[in-house]
Every structure is written in C-alpha cells, then in structure tokens.
Length: 374
Image (tube, rainbow, N blue to C red; front, top):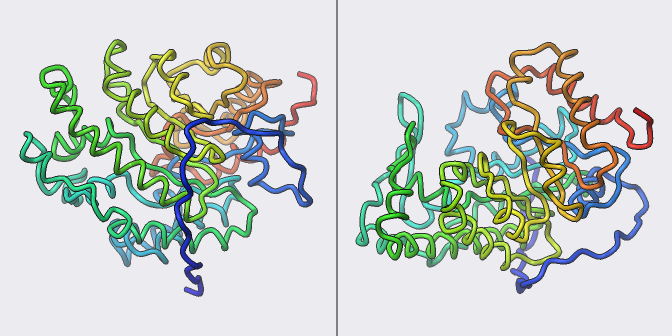
C-alpha cells in the first residue's frame, strides 16, 4: 500500500467546557463540513449520513481481506485498518469515516488480552474477579501500547483529503467492564451490575482505571486528527434507571469533560432511557437506538443537542430497497426543520446487509431537502 504515516502530533491540553462558535464559511463545502455542521446544530440542506459498523462485515472487499488476515491482524496493522476504514467511503461516499478498530483494544492495553472463540464470540485472556485482578490492570504506557491505532489514523486522515469527517471512538467504561468481568461475550451480563450493587468501592476502583485509559485513548485519537469521537455505551440499557448515573453516566461525564471542546462528542447508549443523566453528560450528539421513537426523542432532546439514528438495521436485511426508502423518508420527515440531525442506524450494520438497501438509504437521505414542503 502506498499510504504514508504523517508526522507525530502532540495531545492538546483538554478544556473543561464545551461551546461552539458560529461556523465559518469555507470554499468547497464538503461532507466533512456537512457532518460537523450537524454536530454543531447548524442548519444543513440535508442530514449527513454514516452507519455504525459500516467498515467490514457486509462488504465484499472486506471479506476478501478477511480471507488473508484475521480480524485482530486487521485491527493491529495500521495499513490494513486504514484500508478497511476507507472501503465504505470509496463504495458509498459516507459523510464520515469511522476508524476500523475494536472497543476491546482498551482492556488489552491494560493487560487483559482477548481473542475470538472458535464457535464465535469474544474470550478474554482472564476474567476480572476481585481486587487482585483489578490491581493487575495497568494505566501506564497506554500511548505506546495503542500506537498502532494512531498510526492508522495518520494514514486515513490524508487519504480523506478533508472530504469526509474522520471519527474516532472508544467503548464506555461500563460496557468494557461488562466484558472484563464476564470474561468475554455472554448472553446474560450480570457481574458488573452485581459488583456495582454489592461492592461499590471496588467497582469504582475498576471504573477509575477504565476512565483514565479511555480518556487517554480518545485524546490520542484527537491528536492524530479525528474530527469527532463516539463513545459506545452498548450495554447502557443493562443498568436499572436509578443506577445508570452511578454505573455509566458519571464516568462518561468525566471523560467528556476532559475532551477538547472543539471536538464534537457523540454518546450512543443503547437501551438507556435515563434522559436526565444523558442530557447532562456534556455530549454534543445523542445517538438513538431503534427501540425508541425518533419523534419522542425530538421532543425530549433540546435543540442545542444533535440527534443521531435510528433506522432499524433489519431494514438492511429483510426489506426491499423501495420499502427501505419509504422508511428512511418517514424518519427524515419526523426530523424535518430540526437542525442537528445525523442519519444513522439504531445499531450496527448487520453482516448480511444488502448493498442495494444501503445505497437506497444513502440516495434517500441525499435527495431529501429541508426546504421542500411536505
């Protein structure tokens, strides 16, 4: 591959407040501008669009790479991670590219490695069970251990040439803790909630470490040139309403407070409905999963906070392109007239997604005009 790694950047000192100024008009308005305008809740001609898990899975070019390399090789090799990140941009022209990586690179950098089971799913190298295991987890040398991620970003950034936004990401401390305490993938996540309820000081000790490392990891990505970041709180819905703040929200708020306020932060907390906590995290964009009404979300979320979502991923697998286009149009009409909407799915792209259906989504969004009468 002909990509070259750009010079090293330094991490900017984070701010503790989050404010955006008026957008400065630039010549050659790009998809990146469109995406950032939506994050800032500025009016746009139509919403920007990207899809969670758009890199990989359903793309034939990704499957061709998977015949030669394992998933972990793709993640850990900067040139390969860059290639996979760029594949959906080349094919579909999404308005944002999201780094191809994995949320579990964070516990791996802390000393708890992982691999894929032969029968499917994740297996951690050991299970975090007690104070001794938590003490084993390191917060040192994270920049060095995760340098392959920033190297990948420095390959991707110039390849985008400013046309599409570049997104970095990390898993939330709560979601990571669920994998770490269960020892991998499981149908029923119970240990993290049990620890939160039964031994709050020990739970907080684990979360303190995870919050420190996730913050460092995101700041590394920002220094490498990402335009925005997303925090995946994929297990947020496992927390009872009264425990969401203690289990996840408080830690997300701490992370966001350490992110430079010029960089938009998206929080996607799947299944979480504690709106009071979610709206006080300091996030610029709130992701909405497919199980919540977008019209209701529009009423709940203030006009200065952007929304992202929430097409059901099943529309990419179980419906015709015409049915997909009709559903997308319906969601666009729900959000008509509200600046600050980013079109996305309510969860990730399924492996069996139809390329024709993805194209139908993109065409419908791109052909939508805010100024048209209903």
